[in-house]
Length: 126
Image (tube, rainbow, N blue to C red; front, side):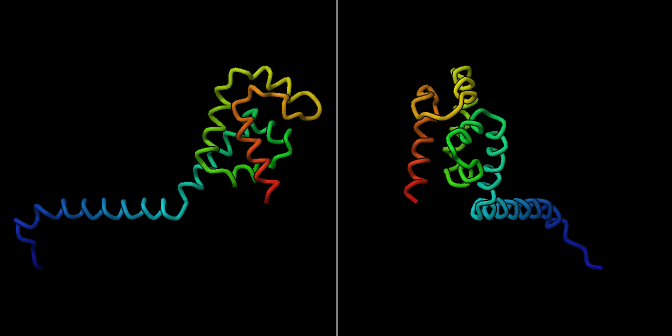
């Protein structure tokens, strides 16, 4: 059996760790490039949205939640979820969501109103 010279044995662990790091980097880049990361982000945000008042607000406005999650940019979806979570007008929101019907002026304080209006407008143009 051949043995690796002592001078080279010192470099083997370093070379293997470098190779592992390179392979890991390529995997991460391929995930980012393929959209898998964005799909995962959408799935997590969709789950969070579904537990918020925003889900009921979408239904109230006649917006399909799944379509909304698929069509808006991830950054806007993240903002909408964060806006709903931190909204200081949750009591007013509950009252509007409990009332029958929908009026665009029902909740001007909602931090997501303008974004939802734009989504509805763009959906009508398609």
